[in-house]
Image (cartoon, rainbow, N blue to C red; front, side, top):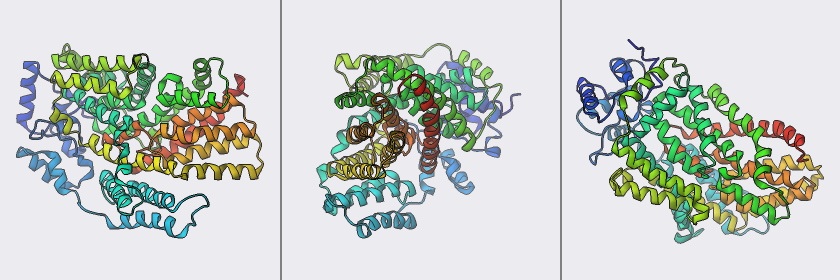
Amino acid sequence: MVSSGVMSAVVRPVTLGRTSVHAQRRSVVQGRSIMPARAIVEKAVSFKTTVRTPLSCYAREPNGSLGMGFNPLKVGRKSLRKAVSTNAQGKSVAHAAAAVEEDGLKLVPAIISIAVGLAVKLFVPIPAGLTVQAWDLLAIFISTVVGLVLKPLPVGAWAFAAATFSIVSGTLDFATTFASLTNEVIWLIVVATIFARAFVKTGFGDRLALFFVKMFGKTTLALAYGLQLAEVAICPAVPSTTARAGGVFVPIINGLDARTKSYLIAQQLQGGNNTSSILLTAAAQNFLCIKLAEGLGVVFTNPFNQWFMAAIVPCTLAILATPLVIYLIDPPGVKDTPEAPIQAAKQLEAMGGLKPAETKMLMGLGVTVCLWVFGTQLGVSAVLAAMIGLCILLSTGVVSWDDALSEKGAWDTLVWFAILIGMSAQLNHLGVVNWLSSSVSSVLVSMQLSWPAAFGLLHLGYFSLHYLFASQTAHVGALYSAFLGMMLASGAPPVLSALTLAFNTNLFGGVTHFASGQSAVYFAAGHLELATLWKQGAYCAVLNFLVWGIAGMLWWKAIGLY
């Protein structure tokens, strides 16, 4: 008999009840699905020990889609019994959870969030060169960000309320407020999330998750390193961190044990920021940085080789350190699973070959990946490639339009992320970002610092200002040239300054849940609490500054960058 602890890393238990177990066994005989071996063992003990929320535990909505919103870990014992009772009557567990969640505005977080913005508006003098409109928008933006952390309302609702107030107050008009709904990165997030549903619906996500458990699943930490290795392997072919997150890693992690999901999502988000720095082709904003640097007169003899040589050592060290540091500070619910790879191998064998639905899904994904790889030559953007792939999935019946509509997290992200990107863009347009960068420049000039000191402080300022941005590309467009110019004026080596600012652009991709497209994707997966994400973003920022600042500087000295 296999213990529940041994099997905890293998994919998903089943819903409780004798009927569901027999139904799963019949499915095996008919070749439709495989019930994980762990489910039989854990059936009788899962509610006596700990609550798990793998995908198979979700009830089906009336339209046949999976109810993705329920997290039993967030509700009390009485509420949990109510939810289980409701599910036994054939209703959605997600609906049961919604019934026990507190609705309406949380007064104390709302007061704090609004008070911070009012303090900026009423008690901080408007700097010379900025308009009242610019300062009002900054106050609204700060209140919005504080509210997104404290959550007086759900994230999307609070962002929507902030957008409404910005229109009511006359700070922005309707068209400007929602102009970013056409942003390609946001739509890439939406489409990638629907791709993730295809992984789950066809069972290929289970297959892929079992493969990773088979290869790396003896411990959760080893599994984390396996996922990091996979991202390094595919980043040259998929030059979009957002696409990698939504199209590959979220579906894999969704198929794993619920007690590991928060940790695996966290380390993948923070570690993936380093992966985006390892190659010039690993992220779209990398090319933009190089183009802007060349526009300021920085000469690269071979940008691909110079980028790789500068990044390889600090990037490797950071990728190795990140899963371990998060493991120590925010450990997973289960750590050691020595027999899990053996059981995963057995289940993979029982699953047999690819089913027709999996084949169709892989066909759509294959077309998408090919277009990601060769999109530059063909003139196809990352989001258009994903849209083409989704059309294939819809046409072949792999996913239905009801499936797409049921991805509430994706549509929620579309709203709040578009609002934040729009506010961020207007802060830049109204001169707030230029004022902040000029203020930093003036302070550095008055201090008469040497280039190494100015170099370090400018990197810190460049990084910190990203808390005002909801897009890495927008941050590059607004600040990269200005900060690079300040570094060059201080006497810092040109190539070193250009490359390290580009690396820094990738490293702040996980400081908030809106810091980047991939951050929004991982947060929308629903396994990571907002406060935890912000906390991890902060301490991983410290980790990255230590690794890149110490090991990086030593390495760059060794290869002659300064």
